[in-house]
Image (cartoon, rainbow, N blue to C red; front, top):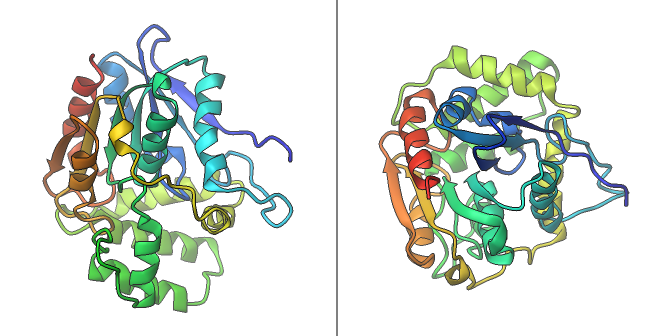
Length: 292
């Protein structure tokens, strides 16, 4: 199998403490807002963000010819660290990126100076199966993670039943609608800003549809997540969840319970995105957490 090239960019002085930003499934690195990144850099951090394989400017893969699993997506974290000459870094992760960060912290603790997970689920909790059961209308077995909000289920059921958008404007309109849902109801939604962001996401993608390979990767390696290992995380851990989280409500508290010494932070009004109203609070928290 050929080596997949991963796009990344770096900000700040090479002598500053390094932070690697890991975005969620099917998501480009530029979903880490420029203003948030800028705040971290101004506070004295060296920040790296990257596009997962099959997103943005990273290579896309013919999945039928060269299948991969989420273990490969996780190993891309090490490749990005190595490419930037980082033996270790502070990992700041969002959504499924938080699963990757937790896994790396268990598997290679010497590479993780600290761990911050935002809007994520506990490693080993099979959150993907919880979402799929919710979308299929199936009952959740006892002990499952909390399911997504009803509006999340309704949105994606309608999306699965709808024909695919046929042109750029329709695709971007659909991306904005999804962003509005993930944004939640706790803060005003800036549709003009959302359109600028989604136009950027759309236009910098080598192949927008290739991101769906992340779902195929999950199906190809359903046993990706090790179970019962979070007690092995040694890195100081900050867990962040929005008060209006529509996708993984209450999952942050479970992560914080399972990782020794982890601290839980609830951000008022935040859903499953990183809107401008949260940047100052989030950046200050990450700055303080990565100061050790």
